[in-house]
Image 1 (tube, rainbow over the protein chains, first blue to last red):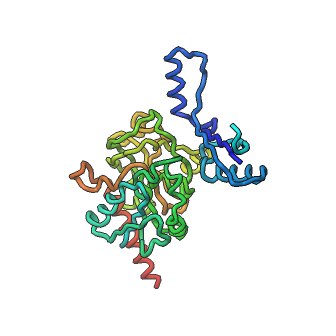
Image 2: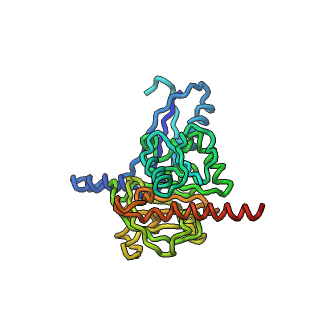
Image 3: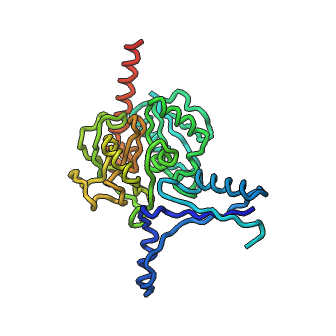
Length: 84
Length: 239
C-alpha cells in the first residue's frame, strides 16, 4: 500500500511562508487568490496488505514523527501500490 | 563539576559550549555522542546549537529520537540541570521536555546578530547569578526561532513564571521592534515546571569572552556551577 500524508499548520498558527507567497501572488496581479497555506506532502510505501492496518500505521507515523501536533495537523490518504 | 555536551550529527556549537565550560570556566567537560545511552558522571547536560540531522523534517524532530535522549529525559526527570541552546532548545520542544514549538522567523530570514535579552527570573540553575531585569547581549543565529504555543500554554508559562528571557532593547524594554523573530510575548527562553530544564534561542556559549564581542553569556554557566556546588554542599550536609 501507499499512503499520502499532508501536513499543514493549524488554522490558528500564523504561516509566514504562506503569507509571503500570497503577497507575491498579489503583486503579480492574482488578486483573487485570497490566502495560501504552505504545508508538507509525504509519499509513503507501506509493506502492509491490509487497508485498516496500513491506515493505522500511516496515521501513527504521521502523528509521532511527520507532524508536530503543537502546530500542525495531518491528513492521510491511502492508495494501492502502483496506482497514481 | 562535569558538563556533558551532547553531540548530534550536525551540531556545530558543541565546541563552543565545551570551550566555555572547560577553558573559560575551568570545569570538567566532555562530549557525549548522540548514540550513547548514558550521560556518565555529568552534573550538567547541554544540548548545543547547530543543525542536527540537517534540520530535515523540522528542527530537532529527528534528534529527539536519538538513543541519548532517553538518558537526557531521565536526567531531567531527576531534577538535574539541562540547558538547550538554539537547536538544543528546539530538540527540547520536539521531545516535550519543554512546551511549545518553533515556527519560521516571521520575516523568513535567518537572523545572525547580537540581540539583547532581559532576564525575567533568577530562580533556575542557569540564571541564579543574574539579577532580575538584567540585560544580556548575546548572539542569535537561527531561521526558526519564532516561539509559538497555544494561548492556554502561554498563559500557564506566564502564570508559573517560566519565561526566563525576553528579547528587549539595550535598555531592557520588551518591544515588538526588539523581537527578531516574532516569538509570542517576546519569548527568548523558558524553563520546565521543575525549573531545571532551560531552553533559549540565543547563544550564551558564544558570548563568554570579550574578545568575541560579549561576555554576557558567561553568567549562565557560572550560575550552573554555583547552583550545583550549592546543591552538592547541601547534600554533603544532609549526609
